[in-house]
Image (cartoon, rainbow, N blue to C red; front, side):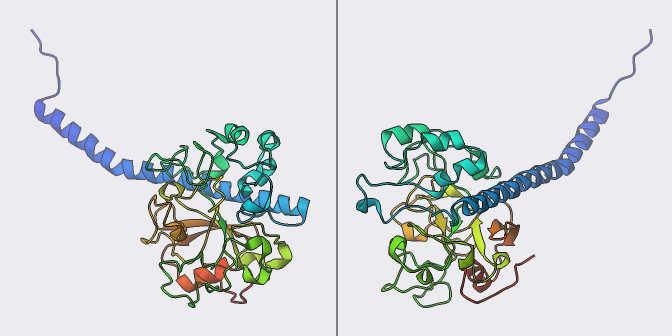
Length: 315
C-alpha cells in the first residue's frame, strides 16, 4: 500500500513561520499605503474647502466670518452660526443650507434637527478614528453646538491672536506669537474691531475680510489647518465659540487640552492623525504639509495676513 506524500510537522512549522515573516513585512507597507490614501483624501478635502472659500468671496466680495460669536446678545432672537453653514452651497450642500434658519440659533430645535447626525466628509479627516462620529473622543457632545453634531477637523486660521489668556506655547503677553494684549484684544468682539487688530484672515465673531486684506501675499498666509477635533472640548463644526485655531500653540503641541471645555483658551491648536505634522490650506488655494518641528516663529508669521513678516513656506 502506497503512502501519500504530505507535510511533516517541521515543514508545516517552517511554512507558518515564513508566512508570518511575510505578513510582518507586508503589513506596514499596507498600512502606509492606506495612510497615504487617507492623506491624499485629506489634501483634497482642504482643496475643496479652499475653492469654496474663494467661491464665497467671488459671490459676496468678502470671506465668510468664522462665527457670529460676539453678537449673540445684540440680535432678537440671537443668532449663532458658523462658516461651515455659510459655505454649504459651495460644497454641494445647497439643500441643507436652505433648511437652516439663519435668523435663529443653530441650536434652536428646528435648526438642530437639520444638523443632527449630519456627517459631511469634506470637513472630516479620514485618518482620524473619531472623524465619522458625532461625539468627541470622550463620547460627549461638542460644547456650544447643537447636540449630536460633527466636529470640524479643518478649522479656519485666526493667526497669532491672544484668546483672553496667553496660549501655553507663548509664555508671555508680548512675545511674537501673541499680537494683542489684554487691553486691545479682538477675541470676542471682532464685529466691532478694526481690521488691523485682527491678525488672521478669520476670527471668532463677524469679520469682513476680503482678498485685499491679505497683504502678506496669498501664497504666504494660512487660511485653514488640521485639528483633531474630537480631542477638544470645543471643536464642533457648528460650535459658535471655536471654529478657528491660532498659532499660539505649536503643531501637535503637548499643551493641547483634551476635552476640557472650561479651559477654552488652549483651544486645541493645529494637530492631525498624520505622522509628523499637519496639513494646511494657504490663501492661494494650495495645500501644504507642515512638520510639527517647524520653527514656531515661522508658523506664527504664516498665520498672520498682514504682519509684513514674509517667510518662505516650508517644503
